[in-house]
Length: 111
Length: 203
Image (cartoon, rainbow over all chains, first blue to last red; front, side, top):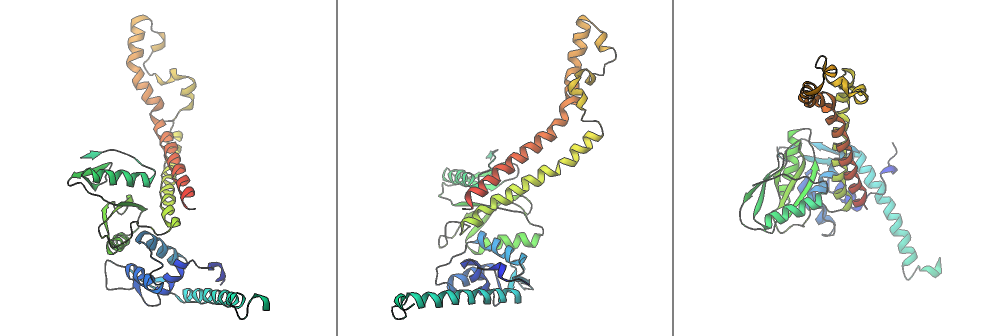
């Protein structure tokens, strides 16, 4: 299965996937994303609903049984975890190469 | 109070509803037009989403997500498509969308609904054509639409009386079916307008 077609994830999608490492419903996900991103990423209800729908379609998350009749609960799938891992590797490389080139010690003149 | 109005542009509809609330008219329901209840003037923030739901649980889950995050579901049903929300908790942001793409996507879903409606009328058009209710020949020779025996042989007052008497019926026979193509064209036009708003707003 070609997972690279999902990359790069948007910041919103990335945090949503991270927020579902444990099962949660939409509102918990909104709060978790806000917390994980140091209040930088705030997802509104309409956007969150659409994002959940897309991620379900892409099978990166799945619905799980819940005791709450009014709120659906979701969790990340194995495929979702793989995509998250791949995107993390991609960003790590970007961070490494950027630090190497921009930092004062191993600076530009050394390269 | 009742108002009959129709919008394609949700932003304009939102502004109108906010203005109505400012004048003391609060949206109650939206079955074929808008029903308002007179009350106190209010600086309301009303936002619109467009979604239809297959299952009742999906609709409840959707409304609950909005309620959890400070938006009261004002009007709209499982199948109505247009969903109205009013902000009730000032500690949240002022919009139900946090990015341009998801905000524009509601126009895409709106447009698709119009296109589906347009397509759903096509079988009716075919059936009407096959059963000769739609008769293109009548457009070339409208005389065929008059069924009074010997009408065209009559003269003077007798002719004009019979002719004018039957004309409304002839028109009904001849052009009543045209509401179908007119409806299809109207739906296609609304779909086109809505899709244009989608393309403009998605960045």
